[in-house]
Image (cartoon, rainbow, N blue to C red; front, top):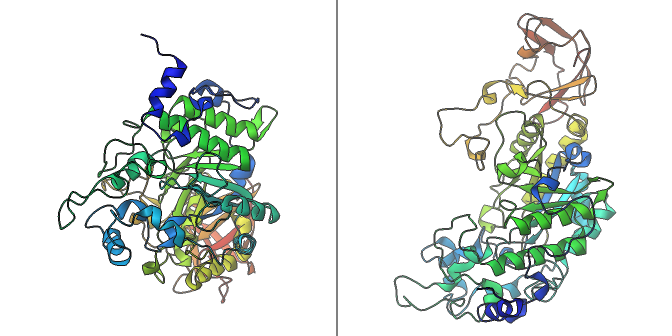
Length: 521
């Protein structure tokens, strides 16, 4: 039996908020902006990663939103509905039971009273970021822009500011490429716990504030409570797929980001293909585009339609195409309990150099507090990166990987450790601190840059074994070697390796870059 368009609209109206019903989005084949890309896998395979991304190497992210208002760490909007969790206990102690005071009621606490996008962007630019990314919408279904399709947004509520728009204006002023992150696709499952209840205790069985359905415009349309979260599209309604497409299309239309990040895969097949084509066409020049899309599903990047993103992890080799690590100096959302326990400057620099040597970029999140201003410890980390970049940035920007990414104790992935699979996400926790024996390479034209990742205890000499006279990694005669920030050095090359005499004073802290001019690089 066929179903008419009018009948479909009436059917949807009975199950989802009337607020969202827009007949124009009821087809996955919604109108696209004209351009070289169409919403098909075959067309999207024409995509080529633009040089600006390949050359940029370092970006900074503001993973910020109403969940930051509580300053209690990641996934507050979900975990406050998970009885027994740290954030549930915090919420009950500070605000009351989630049946009476839900996530929707916390949004007013996000005031962003000290937010200064221009000031922050100036710091990020100074620290060496070539691109910047703002949160667009997290799993909490709250838009950080003047959303046409969602009343739960930062212009109407909370700070009453167009966060995405303010960040874009600042990024353009400071000549940084601009990105936006999208975490929306999984929201109905992620937020479904708001429709549950305590399993035990005096309020067992009393529904949380999402249970009535009165706030489905925020909490989503899931009919099932997912206490264990599967990151799959199974169980997500057709309506939500359509709505996701229209919401993110609105975001792309209003702000035309250079980079659009997915916290997961390119979702919902035809809707995803159409969205990706629309995003690419917005930045199209002839048959090519300057736009970037990142996906954490390796098959998306393997198909050649986007860039691979590895969350809190590093790939195990030189990746054939540019890729990105996204990670954070602490929690994703600001956590006042983590202040003073952030990644050290050395850890960040080690990550950056290691990632770039493997053909990747580092996207580093500095979580903003509720006020919108970095805390003093975050500023110290940022200043450490700034000082290091002043000396070593030429060995980072615009470089390409060499024949091998590096050598030394931390250059081999432990194959018998099931957790260490660096083609997957979240292997960052397995990393050990780099030392002077760990070497990482980048190159640019006839220059080979060799980073030694610590200063030898003797302070006199560093040896690079792959550059020996008998190494299979052949290079021609070496003309000069310079230590960036210190000047030219004396060296000797024999069967044991390239032996470089170091100066008495270190030119910087952390990784040190040797600039090797030679033939056959």
